Image (cartoon, rainbow, N blue to C red; front, side, top):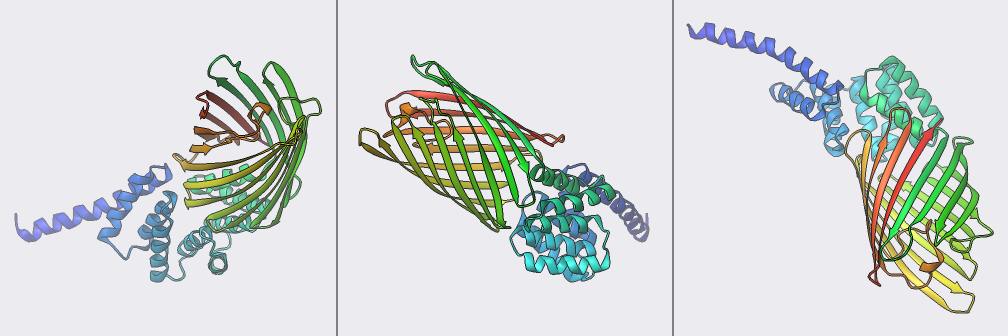
Length: 400
Protein backbone atom coordinates (compact mmCIF):
# COMPACT_ATOMS: atom_id res chain seq x y z
CA UNK A 1 0.00 0.00 0.00
CA UNK A 2 1.40 3.44 -0.89
CA UNK A 3 2.61 5.52 2.05
CA UNK A 4 0.29 8.41 1.19
CA UNK A 5 -2.72 6.05 1.29
CA UNK A 6 -1.70 4.62 4.69
CA UNK A 7 -1.37 8.16 6.06
CA UNK A 8 -4.77 9.09 4.69
CA UNK A 9 -6.38 6.05 6.31
CA UNK A 10 -4.78 6.84 9.68
CA UNK A 11 -5.99 10.47 9.56
CA UNK A 12 -9.49 9.34 8.58
CA UNK A 13 -9.55 6.78 11.43
CA UNK A 14 -8.33 9.34 13.98
CA UNK A 15 -10.92 11.88 12.84
CA UNK A 16 -13.62 9.32 13.39
CA UNK A 17 -12.29 8.24 16.77
CA UNK A 18 -12.08 11.69 18.40
CA UNK A 19 -15.81 12.51 18.33
CA UNK A 20 -16.47 9.05 19.78
CA UNK A 21 -13.97 9.72 22.57
CA UNK A 22 -15.53 13.10 23.35
CA UNK A 23 -19.00 11.58 23.47
CA UNK A 24 -17.81 8.79 25.77
CA UNK A 25 -16.04 11.31 28.00
CA UNK A 26 -19.12 13.52 28.32
CA UNK A 27 -21.29 10.50 29.03
CA UNK A 28 -18.85 9.29 31.71
CA UNK A 29 -18.89 12.72 33.35
CA UNK A 30 -22.68 12.93 33.39
CA UNK A 31 -22.98 9.42 34.82
CA UNK A 32 -20.62 10.30 37.66
CA UNK A 33 -17.64 8.24 36.44
CA UNK A 34 -15.34 11.14 37.25
CA UNK A 35 -11.89 9.52 37.05
CA UNK A 36 -12.74 7.81 33.76
CA UNK A 37 -14.07 11.05 32.27
CA UNK A 38 -11.04 13.03 33.45
CA UNK A 39 -8.64 10.59 31.80
CA UNK A 40 -10.60 10.75 28.53
CA UNK A 41 -10.72 14.55 28.42
CA UNK A 42 -7.02 14.75 29.27
CA UNK A 43 -6.33 12.55 26.23
CA UNK A 44 -8.27 15.00 24.07
CA UNK A 45 -6.48 17.96 25.62
CA UNK A 46 -3.07 16.36 25.11
CA UNK A 47 -3.81 16.10 21.39
CA UNK A 48 -5.44 19.56 21.17
CA UNK A 49 -4.12 21.97 23.87
CA UNK A 50 -6.22 24.83 22.42
CA UNK A 51 -9.52 22.91 22.87
CA UNK A 52 -11.35 25.21 25.29
CA UNK A 53 -14.29 22.86 25.85
CA UNK A 54 -12.04 19.94 26.77
CA UNK A 55 -10.05 22.16 29.14
CA UNK A 56 -13.26 23.30 30.82
CA UNK A 57 -14.35 19.70 31.30
CA UNK A 58 -10.96 18.89 32.84
CA UNK A 59 -11.35 21.86 35.21
CA UNK A 60 -14.88 20.86 36.24
CA UNK A 61 -13.84 17.27 36.90
CA UNK A 62 -10.78 18.33 38.91
CA UNK A 63 -13.03 20.51 41.05
CA UNK A 64 -15.48 17.63 41.51
CA UNK A 65 -12.58 15.54 42.83
CA UNK A 66 -11.51 18.26 45.24
CA UNK A 67 -8.38 19.49 43.40
CA UNK A 68 -9.37 23.15 43.66
CA UNK A 69 -5.97 24.69 42.89
CA UNK A 70 -5.54 22.63 39.72
CA UNK A 71 -9.14 23.35 38.69
CA UNK A 72 -8.66 27.10 39.11
CA UNK A 73 -5.51 26.97 36.94
CA UNK A 74 -7.39 25.17 34.14
CA UNK A 75 -10.30 27.64 34.32
CA UNK A 76 -7.87 30.57 34.07
CA UNK A 77 -6.18 29.04 31.02
CA UNK A 78 -9.55 28.48 29.35
CA UNK A 79 -10.60 32.08 30.06
CA UNK A 80 -7.28 33.40 28.72
CA UNK A 81 -7.98 31.57 25.44
CA UNK A 82 -11.64 32.68 25.30
CA UNK A 83 -12.26 35.83 27.44
CA UNK A 84 -16.00 35.90 26.63
CA UNK A 85 -16.67 32.21 27.20
CA UNK A 86 -19.58 32.02 29.65
CA UNK A 87 -18.67 28.60 31.09
CA UNK A 88 -15.07 29.70 31.68
CA UNK A 89 -16.26 32.83 33.50
CA UNK A 90 -18.67 30.83 35.66
CA UNK A 91 -16.23 28.02 36.40
CA UNK A 92 -13.52 30.40 37.54
CA UNK A 93 -16.05 32.34 39.64
CA UNK A 94 -17.07 29.18 41.47
CA UNK A 95 -13.45 28.15 42.05
CA UNK A 96 -12.61 31.61 43.43
CA UNK A 97 -15.63 31.77 45.73
CA UNK A 98 -14.65 28.39 47.18
CA UNK A 99 -11.44 29.89 48.56
CA UNK A 100 -13.08 33.13 49.70
CA UNK A 101 -12.16 35.43 46.78
CA UNK A 102 -15.77 36.61 46.53
CA UNK A 103 -15.06 40.06 45.07
CA UNK A 104 -13.28 38.74 41.97
CA UNK A 105 -15.87 35.94 41.71
CA UNK A 106 -18.74 38.48 41.74
CA UNK A 107 -17.11 40.43 38.90
CA UNK A 108 -16.85 37.28 36.79
CA UNK A 109 -20.49 36.35 37.51
CA UNK A 110 -21.58 39.83 36.43
CA UNK A 111 -19.67 39.46 33.15
CA UNK A 112 -21.27 36.05 32.55
CA UNK A 113 -24.75 37.34 33.39
CA UNK A 114 -24.45 40.09 30.78
CA UNK A 115 -23.75 37.39 28.17
CA UNK A 116 -26.21 34.63 29.22
CA UNK A 117 -28.57 35.53 32.09
CA UNK A 118 -30.47 32.20 32.01
CA UNK A 119 -27.48 29.86 31.78
CA UNK A 120 -27.98 27.00 34.33
CA UNK A 121 -24.35 27.11 35.45
CA UNK A 122 -24.66 30.85 35.96
CA UNK A 123 -27.76 30.35 38.10
CA UNK A 124 -25.81 27.77 40.13
CA UNK A 125 -22.94 30.26 40.56
CA UNK A 126 -25.41 32.94 41.68
CA UNK A 127 -26.80 30.43 44.15
CA UNK A 128 -23.35 29.74 45.59
CA UNK A 129 -22.70 33.46 46.02
CA UNK A 130 -26.08 33.88 47.73
CA UNK A 131 -25.42 30.99 50.10
CA UNK A 132 -21.96 32.27 51.06
CA UNK A 133 -23.53 35.71 51.61
CA UNK A 134 -26.02 34.30 54.10
CA UNK A 135 -29.09 34.10 51.83
CA UNK A 136 -29.89 30.35 51.63
CA UNK A 137 -33.51 30.87 50.50
CA UNK A 138 -32.32 32.89 47.51
CA UNK A 139 -29.70 30.23 46.79
CA UNK A 140 -32.36 27.50 46.82
CA UNK A 141 -34.54 29.53 44.40
CA UNK A 142 -31.63 29.96 41.94
CA UNK A 143 -30.78 26.26 42.08
CA UNK A 144 -34.41 25.26 41.60
CA UNK A 145 -34.38 27.23 38.32
CA UNK A 146 -31.03 25.75 37.30
CA UNK A 147 -32.16 22.20 38.07
CA UNK A 148 -35.43 22.66 36.16
CA UNK A 149 -33.47 23.98 33.16
CA UNK A 150 -30.81 21.26 33.27
CA UNK A 151 -32.17 18.23 35.20
CA UNK A 152 -29.42 15.85 34.00
CA UNK A 153 -26.55 17.99 35.32
CA UNK A 154 -25.22 16.03 38.31
CA UNK A 155 -23.25 18.95 39.77
CA UNK A 156 -26.33 21.20 39.80
CA UNK A 157 -28.48 18.39 41.22
CA UNK A 158 -26.01 17.83 44.08
CA UNK A 159 -25.78 21.56 44.82
CA UNK A 160 -29.59 21.83 44.84
CA UNK A 161 -29.82 18.91 47.27
CA UNK A 162 -27.09 20.37 49.49
CA UNK A 163 -28.68 23.81 49.82
CA UNK A 164 -32.03 22.24 50.69
CA UNK A 165 -30.33 20.20 53.41
CA UNK A 166 -28.95 23.46 54.82
CA UNK A 167 -32.05 25.59 54.39
CA UNK A 168 -35.01 23.37 55.33
CA UNK A 169 -36.54 22.70 58.75
CA UNK A 170 -35.17 19.60 60.48
CA UNK A 171 -36.51 16.83 62.67
CA UNK A 172 -33.63 15.03 64.37
CA UNK A 173 -33.63 11.85 66.43
CA UNK A 174 -30.80 9.84 67.93
CA UNK A 175 -30.30 6.81 70.15
CA UNK A 176 -27.17 5.64 71.92
CA UNK A 177 -26.14 2.67 74.00
CA UNK A 178 -23.12 2.54 76.26
CA UNK A 179 -21.75 -0.87 77.24
CA UNK A 180 -19.24 -0.51 80.08
CA UNK A 181 -16.77 -3.22 80.89
CA UNK A 182 -17.02 -5.09 84.16
CA UNK A 183 -20.19 -5.31 86.24
CA UNK A 184 -21.69 -1.91 85.35
CA UNK A 185 -25.06 -1.98 83.62
CA UNK A 186 -25.53 -0.59 80.13
CA UNK A 187 -26.77 2.97 79.68
CA UNK A 188 -29.24 4.16 77.05
CA UNK A 189 -30.20 7.62 75.84
CA UNK A 190 -32.63 9.05 73.31
CA UNK A 191 -32.76 12.54 71.88
CA UNK A 192 -35.40 14.28 69.72
CA UNK A 193 -35.10 17.83 68.39
CA UNK A 194 -36.99 20.08 66.00
CA UNK A 195 -34.98 22.83 64.28
CA UNK A 196 -36.99 25.47 62.42
CA UNK A 197 -35.73 28.15 60.04
CA UNK A 198 -37.44 31.33 61.23
CA UNK A 199 -35.60 33.39 58.60
CA UNK A 200 -32.40 33.31 56.58
CA UNK A 201 -30.55 34.56 59.64
CA UNK A 202 -32.38 32.91 62.54
CA UNK A 203 -33.12 29.28 63.44
CA UNK A 204 -34.89 28.15 66.63
CA UNK A 205 -35.02 24.66 68.10
CA UNK A 206 -36.70 22.57 70.79
CA UNK A 207 -35.16 19.43 72.27
CA UNK A 208 -36.08 16.55 74.58
CA UNK A 209 -33.45 14.18 75.98
CA UNK A 210 -33.99 11.04 78.08
CA UNK A 211 -31.40 8.72 79.63
CA UNK A 212 -31.36 5.52 81.61
CA UNK A 213 -28.18 5.23 83.63
CA UNK A 214 -27.40 3.37 86.87
CA UNK A 215 -30.98 2.13 86.98
CA UNK A 216 -32.47 5.63 86.94
CA UNK A 217 -34.54 7.14 84.14
CA UNK A 218 -34.10 10.90 83.80
CA UNK A 219 -35.18 13.46 81.22
CA UNK A 220 -34.43 17.04 80.22
CA UNK A 221 -36.05 19.49 77.81
CA UNK A 222 -35.07 22.85 76.43
CA UNK A 223 -34.64 25.18 73.48
CA UNK A 224 -31.97 26.84 71.39
CA UNK A 225 -31.41 29.66 68.95
CA UNK A 226 -28.93 30.26 66.12
CA UNK A 227 -28.34 33.75 64.71
CA UNK A 228 -26.23 34.38 61.65
CA UNK A 229 -25.15 37.90 62.53
CA UNK A 230 -23.04 38.21 59.40
CA UNK A 231 -22.34 35.79 56.54
CA UNK A 232 -19.17 34.62 58.27
CA UNK A 233 -20.30 34.99 61.91
CA UNK A 234 -22.80 32.72 63.66
CA UNK A 235 -23.92 32.84 67.30
CA UNK A 236 -25.66 29.95 69.06
CA UNK A 237 -27.23 29.49 72.47
CA UNK A 238 -29.14 26.64 74.11
CA UNK A 239 -30.40 25.36 77.44
CA UNK A 240 -31.69 22.04 78.78
CA UNK A 241 -33.51 21.73 82.11
CA UNK A 242 -34.24 18.53 84.08
CA UNK A 243 -35.32 19.53 87.62
CA UNK A 244 -35.44 15.98 88.99
CA UNK A 245 -32.18 14.72 87.52
CA UNK A 246 -29.54 13.31 89.87
CA UNK A 247 -27.21 11.44 87.48
CA UNK A 248 -27.17 13.78 84.47
CA UNK A 249 -27.01 17.58 84.70
CA UNK A 250 -30.16 19.32 85.94
CA UNK A 251 -29.29 22.37 83.87
CA UNK A 252 -27.09 22.54 80.77
CA UNK A 253 -26.61 25.99 79.26
CA UNK A 254 -24.20 26.85 76.44
CA UNK A 255 -23.21 29.73 74.18
CA UNK A 256 -21.00 29.48 71.10
CA UNK A 257 -19.58 31.75 68.42
CA UNK A 258 -18.31 30.57 65.02
CA UNK A 259 -16.38 32.61 62.48
CA UNK A 260 -15.59 31.33 58.99
CA UNK A 261 -12.87 32.74 56.77
CA UNK A 262 -12.42 30.87 53.54
CA UNK A 263 -11.52 27.28 54.36
CA UNK A 264 -10.90 28.03 58.06
CA UNK A 265 -13.62 27.97 60.73
CA UNK A 266 -12.85 29.27 64.24
CA UNK A 267 -15.08 28.38 67.17
CA UNK A 268 -15.30 29.42 70.80
CA UNK A 269 -17.75 28.23 73.42
CA UNK A 270 -18.71 28.44 77.08
CA UNK A 271 -20.94 25.95 78.90
CA UNK A 272 -22.37 25.55 82.40
CA UNK A 273 -23.55 22.20 83.79
CA UNK A 274 -25.36 22.07 87.14
CA UNK A 275 -25.57 18.84 89.17
CA UNK A 276 -27.17 18.39 92.62
CA UNK A 277 -23.78 18.53 94.36
CA UNK A 278 -21.52 20.22 91.80
CA UNK A 279 -21.27 22.79 89.04
CA UNK A 280 -19.04 22.58 85.94
CA UNK A 281 -17.79 25.42 83.72
CA UNK A 282 -16.34 24.49 80.31
CA UNK A 283 -14.38 26.80 78.00
CA UNK A 284 -13.68 25.45 74.52
CA UNK A 285 -11.83 27.13 71.63
CA UNK A 286 -11.53 25.18 68.40
CA UNK A 287 -10.76 25.31 64.69
CA UNK A 288 -11.65 23.37 61.55
CA UNK A 289 -9.81 23.53 58.22
CA UNK A 290 -11.18 22.32 54.88
CA UNK A 291 -8.17 20.91 53.05
CA UNK A 292 -10.40 20.33 50.00
CA UNK A 293 -14.16 20.34 49.41
CA UNK A 294 -14.09 16.68 50.47
CA UNK A 295 -11.67 16.62 53.40
CA UNK A 296 -11.65 18.53 56.67
CA UNK A 297 -9.57 18.36 59.84
CA UNK A 298 -10.63 19.84 63.18
CA UNK A 299 -9.35 20.25 66.70
CA UNK A 300 -10.86 21.51 69.93
CA UNK A 301 -9.55 22.13 73.43
CA UNK A 302 -11.76 21.94 76.54
CA UNK A 303 -10.80 23.44 79.89
CA UNK A 304 -13.32 22.42 82.56
CA UNK A 305 -13.52 23.41 86.22
CA UNK A 306 -15.75 21.52 88.65
CA UNK A 307 -16.79 23.06 91.97
CA UNK A 308 -18.29 20.65 94.53
CA UNK A 309 -20.70 21.67 97.29
CA UNK A 310 -18.08 20.47 99.78
CA UNK A 311 -15.79 23.30 98.66
CA UNK A 312 -13.36 21.13 96.66
CA UNK A 313 -12.53 21.97 93.05
CA UNK A 314 -11.08 19.97 90.15
CA UNK A 315 -9.72 21.06 86.79
CA UNK A 316 -9.63 18.99 83.63
CA UNK A 317 -7.98 19.55 80.27
CA UNK A 318 -9.41 17.64 77.32
CA UNK A 319 -8.75 17.66 73.59
CA UNK A 320 -10.38 16.40 70.42
CA UNK A 321 -8.91 15.77 66.94
CA UNK A 322 -11.17 14.89 64.03
CA UNK A 323 -10.89 13.96 60.34
CA UNK A 324 -13.83 13.98 57.93
CA UNK A 325 -13.64 12.73 54.35
CA UNK A 326 -16.26 12.42 51.63
CA UNK A 327 -16.01 9.00 50.00
CA UNK A 328 -18.98 9.38 47.61
CA UNK A 329 -21.21 12.36 46.73
CA UNK A 330 -23.58 11.23 49.50
CA UNK A 331 -21.34 9.51 52.08
CA UNK A 332 -18.82 10.84 54.62
CA UNK A 333 -16.42 9.00 56.92
CA UNK A 334 -15.54 10.46 60.31
CA UNK A 335 -12.62 9.54 62.58
CA UNK A 336 -11.84 11.13 65.95
CA UNK A 337 -9.57 10.83 68.95
CA UNK A 338 -10.30 12.38 72.35
CA UNK A 339 -8.15 12.75 75.41
CA UNK A 340 -10.15 13.38 78.59
CA UNK A 341 -13.85 14.10 78.29
CA UNK A 342 -15.14 12.93 74.90
CA UNK A 343 -18.70 14.32 75.21
CA UNK A 344 -20.38 16.77 77.55
CA UNK A 345 -23.85 15.86 76.23
CA UNK A 346 -23.58 12.52 78.04
CA UNK A 347 -21.61 13.72 81.09
CA UNK A 348 -22.85 11.99 84.26
CA UNK A 349 -22.12 12.64 87.90
CA UNK A 350 -19.80 9.63 88.24
CA UNK A 351 -17.26 11.26 85.90
CA UNK A 352 -17.00 14.61 87.68
CA UNK A 353 -13.65 15.61 89.06
CA UNK A 354 -10.39 14.38 87.60
CA UNK A 355 -11.18 12.25 84.55
CA UNK A 356 -8.55 10.60 82.36
CA UNK A 357 -9.45 8.53 79.30
CA UNK A 358 -8.56 7.91 75.68
CA UNK A 359 -11.40 7.55 73.17
CA UNK A 360 -11.25 6.59 69.51
CA UNK A 361 -14.29 6.96 67.27
CA UNK A 362 -15.35 6.02 63.77
CA UNK A 363 -18.55 6.93 61.98
CA UNK A 364 -20.43 7.06 58.69
CA UNK A 365 -22.85 9.75 57.50
CA UNK A 366 -25.07 9.09 54.50
CA UNK A 367 -27.38 11.63 52.81
CA UNK A 368 -30.38 10.15 51.01
CA UNK A 369 -31.87 11.86 47.96
CA UNK A 370 -35.11 12.25 49.96
CA UNK A 371 -33.40 14.91 52.14
CA UNK A 372 -32.99 12.41 54.97
CA UNK A 373 -29.63 11.61 56.54
CA UNK A 374 -28.51 8.64 58.60
CA UNK A 375 -25.37 8.57 60.71
CA UNK A 376 -23.85 5.86 62.87
CA UNK A 377 -20.77 5.89 65.04
CA UNK A 378 -18.85 3.63 67.41
CA UNK A 379 -16.69 4.94 70.27
CA UNK A 380 -14.22 2.90 72.28
CA UNK A 381 -12.95 4.41 75.51
CA UNK A 382 -10.16 3.24 77.77
CA UNK A 383 -9.99 4.97 81.14
CA UNK A 384 -7.02 5.50 83.43
CA UNK A 385 -8.46 3.00 85.94
CA UNK A 386 -8.32 0.31 83.19
CA UNK A 387 -12.10 0.31 82.72
CA UNK A 388 -13.42 0.46 79.18
CA UNK A 389 -16.62 1.50 77.45
CA UNK A 390 -18.13 1.00 74.00
CA UNK A 391 -20.76 3.46 72.78
CA UNK A 392 -22.91 2.94 69.67
CA UNK A 393 -24.90 5.89 68.34
CA UNK A 394 -27.44 6.06 65.52
CA UNK A 395 -29.03 9.32 64.33
CA UNK A 396 -31.61 10.24 61.70
CA UNK A 397 -32.40 13.68 60.28
CA UNK A 398 -35.55 14.43 58.26
CA UNK A 399 -35.85 17.77 56.46
CA UNK A 400 -39.14 19.34 55.49
